Length: 554
Image (cartoon, rainbow, N blue to C red):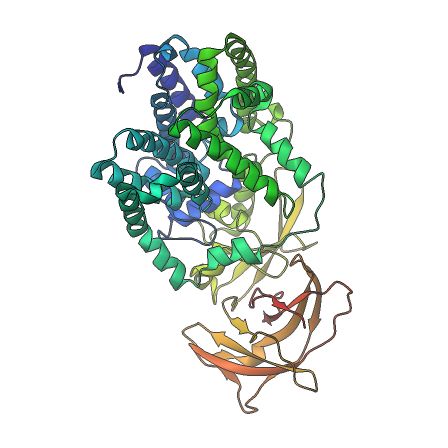
């Protein structure tokens, strides 16, 4: 395999790289990027929502630049690397005649295009998927210890990028079950597991919080054909835009010819099938499917080299896609050219509007792991997301950021306030309010524990316990207790404030790093669809916290 790139390829790639650099510099962060920037301020082997690769590339970017490009630089480099690796996955010597078609194909894919300048977990996932396939292709031809080590390290890179990377690895294995008897394949697995051990340890030390949330605790809703299954097929079209008929035509015309080709087809069809089945349970987001773009590019480009009709229409429709996407990219920077107010619009303005009124006063945002890091990124001042039962846990629930606002005068910002000490407008023109709270104190890390299976005494009393993870004792008089009823989709449906008392009557403190037993009279839900409940705590009048796990009602 020749590693030399044609001159026209380098020119086109350089042009895309420069465009992405300019876009990365002039486009304000979107909410998820701000959240991952927050990850990178506290480097760890794992985070609530994702493994640490996205934080690493943000951290590396910040070594070269400040501002938005200090979040996006390495992601832009990885995107360029993905173009190169994909090119080397094509063996046909005729490819040098159709370089323009190659770029029309790749650059026209909606999310491949977007992840060229946005830094999200899928950015390294796409890169490592391409590298994984390239090394696997070489491995099939001539397995060796060196390739096994490389393959293992890249598999670890995949898994450090995003948890659903396990699908990529498993589907390639299923496509070639003889790998089970290959000693070099087992060496790769061993290298990958050893390399991934720090994250396994992090998961263990954090009670497998990421896995438990994604698999078991994430709220859902009743099945809707239009939004779930039909929406899944809409996403399959959205990935490719105008080229989608020719993309899928090329896929259907491709037959298994060798083990590598088989791996590509297993990846594409396997991921589509997996998420199609999942669509009967929950709404599928477009980015969950993006990894199929990598094998799809190889499959479709091979068809471009063989079929004049495919070659013609991919170039025409791909170019049209690119024109539309480039126009929208300008709109990401200049709002009047974009059809809607998007996440990249107006963030500096609302941050400046708040900070100009309050100076360096810390800001506590209610239920917003997106506004909190965005505020800190653009103002440089302290912020925190205080999460309650109307939201979901996130990195702010896991790390030590709560300590930064304790005992201070803070501005509390909530979208449910209809008046306040200050107000500001977001990019959509909606007005929001904030109120000052002196000597702010929260205990969001208190944990309520209900033993399962659930057992109620004859008089319907429930015994539960509270673990205090803080370094100080907490006065029980500062706490109120509530029973939260949820439906079978884990959505909060009812809150009942209930008195709860320590089983030891004289107890008035939650001792530091200790567990205290409590007892409450279990109420009956007033709703007909109650399926789960949890015990929640309100401290100092703050809204009910995410203190306990969901427990199935008897």
